[in-house]
Image 1: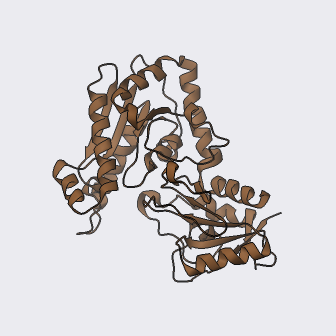
Image 2: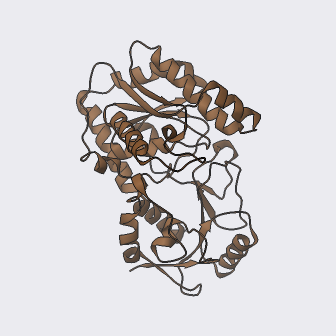
Image 3: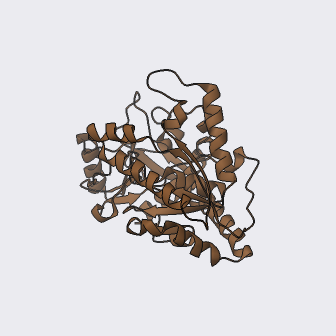
Length: 336
C-alpha cells in the first residue's frame, strides 16, 4: 500500500525537492553531466512507494519546495496541525541558522549541533553512485600504512583573504580547516597521503564568468574518482556549510571517511553508530589527526578492514540514497 502525501503550497514554476518532482509535483531539479543519474532510481520507484493526495486523504503533509520561514510554510504547518497529521520540510543550504517552524520537522544538511532546535533533523547530502562510475565497488586490502586521499577545493591565501573581506566567514572556516588538516597529515611519516588541492571550485572547470569547460570537467571528475578509488581513507570535513558532501560520496564508494567533527549533526544517529563507519576526530583534537588515523588503522585486522568498507557501502545503499532516505523519513513521520 502506497503512502499518501499532500504537497501543500506547490508552485508550478518553482524547483521542487526531488521527492515532489519524482511524483510529478513542480519542476524537477536540473541534473546534467556527472550527476545526471542521481535521481533515476527515485524517479522510477517513487510512484510505487508514495502518491500525491489531497489533504483529507493524506497520511502526511510535505512542502514541495525548499523550506523558508515564510507565510506559506507556516500556513501549511498550521493546517497539518489542525488535522493532526505530520508535516515535513526539507532545506538544502549551506546556511546553518536554526529553523523552528511552528509545527512539523525540517530535514536539512547544514546544522550546528549545539544550536539545533527540536524541529530540526539531519539530512544526508544526496550523492551519485560513484562505484557505478568506476566499474563497481571493490574493497581495498589493508596495507601497513594507512593511505588518505583528498581531492578538492582549498582555495589560496589571497582567495581566503578575499572571502574574509566579503564577510563569508563560514566559507573561510571550511577552507582554512581543510588546508590545516592536509598539512598536518603530510607531516605525519606514518600516513601515506594522496592530495590534490584545488585553488578554484571544480578546478576552474565551472565558472560564473564563462561557460563550463566539458573537457576540464571530465578531467577533474576523473581525478576525483581516481583519488577515491586509490585511497583507504578520505579526509572529510566541512566546507561553506557545516556538513561534508564528500563524506557521503566516500561511503558510496565504500571507503572510510576521516571525519573532522565541527559541531555536526549526522542523519539517523539514533540508529546509525557513525563512529563505527569512520575515523572520528573532534575539531579540538585536529593536531592529532594523523595519530588518530594510525590508531584506527592499526586496530583493524585485514578482514575487519575489508568488512568496514563493505559496511560503509551497505550503509549508503540502505539508508543514504535518495529513495531509501525518503522512505525512512516518511515512515518515521507517519509512525509518529
